[in-house]
Image 1 (cartoon, rainbow, N blue to C red):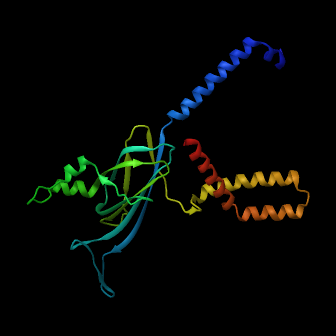
Image 2 (image 1 turned 135 degrees about the horizontal axis):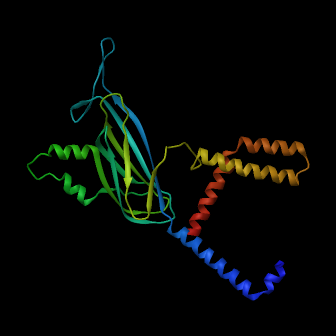
Image 3 (image 1 turned 120 degrees about the vertical axis):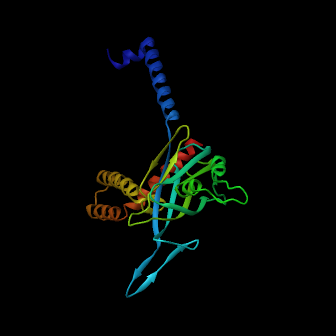
Length: 257
């Protein structure tokens, strides 16, 4: 039975059309039901260290009048990598080996900050005329709970913490999001090129360069010109890669509305 016979057979054609429609519907539903992705990265910068030296003297780093061994500024960036907007996203920042001191939060690109959740405010509240308990101090130093009222697609929320660590270890600060339909993953911070991470831009640029070379082999007869163009493409591999990724993002945003 050849293709023309199948096309002329209305029953077979109807069955194939129905199967194709069902398969398309299943794939679209899987696409719509997939879990949205949040990613975060953490960057630690040491801003001070206490030291005693018999020759060069001593350096003391203090916070609220109390000496600390080492002082860090840690920055966490949480990014909504999905094509969806979310409301009421609760974010928990926690640490086991550091003390979180002062903080600054920001929804990047806006004038808004991120506030504590109502439950967290209740847990750290201190009645007038009283002092925080040891449990409250320990809770505040090792955990912060925030609520993001609106977290739009592609948006970034930044958390900055002045913190201190005893001993020679570096701070270990983590972020947790438990929200319906969201998967939150840690990713190592990478250098950016034109708003795209360099490894991603390099990979996309390599693919674009390969397609460019194939096109030259097919349509360009002058080998000298082809060699120069291929060499230039290799030197500037990050540029076409970054442009391709940004174009894909624009297309993705347009498709997602």
